[in-house]
Length: 113
Length: 115
Image (cartoon, rainbow over all chains, first blue to last red; front, side, top):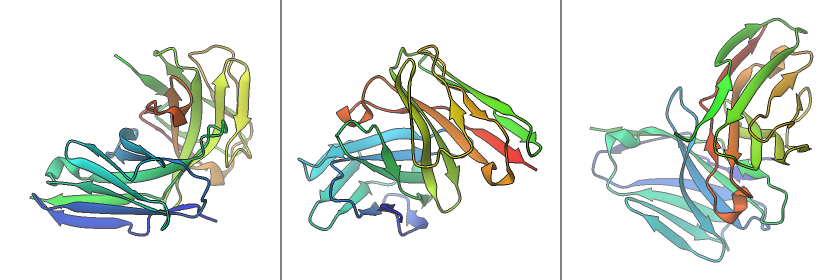
């Protein structure tokens, strides 16, 4: 059973527009969430995180929104740039000492110039 | 430069031939882990270690072993590799509990093919 789901395997967006990547989770115990970006032939790199005590966290062009009642988070990239083209993974964890993250399956974002 | 280094980066091996993928980090991190990435399944945790001599199973530990004799090294051992272990493997490290807000650093990945 996939506890963290990214239902869109791919997304194409025009340069300068907003990219919205979605992530749903099923475990209500999750209280910490992260987004990672992965380029081909490279390891994932940390992008942004959010704790369940917040519903929004912003870092430059990247904003993560958390809707706990819907068990849904989203990553907004504004404006999108061609260099943002990558695979994006969301991950969720429980702050109870298990040190385990559950990752989603990833969404491939393509920003068209 | 902060780094997580994995070796080998690419390997084709045969079923049953023991192999080790090494992982080393130069950031004095306590926490290290191994993930595998498969199409449609995302990143799945194999094993993790909270400190020297402390290791625990992740979500998909079957067929793998790890050891943490030194803080900087966390090798992944496949005692008898099988074709279903063909995958892209990532080692990762973090200075503390990843859930405290610290960033997890990933290595560049090791492509392993078992024939």
